[in-house]
Image 1 (cartoon, rainbow, N blue to C red):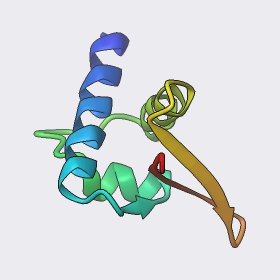
Image 2 (cartoon, rainbow, N blue to C red):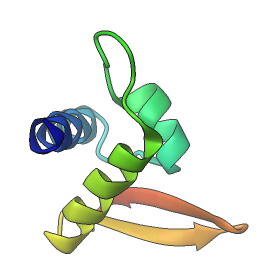
Image 3 (tube, rainbow, N blue to C red):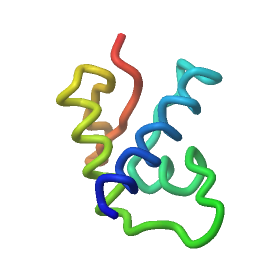
Length: 75
């Protein structure tokens, strides 16, 4: 189930960024606003793992701003 959950999250993030390529947010903001959960949201740790996977694949970048990690599409 975890692999399916990660794929769902990553697909949702990709779709969001396709429509809004300049978007950037924290893991909490991404979990809340970028993903249409269609029911109960998954744990924030799953969103964090998906973001890390996407960074490792070269799709996303992160930067620290005011002590918070902000995620955005790789430029």
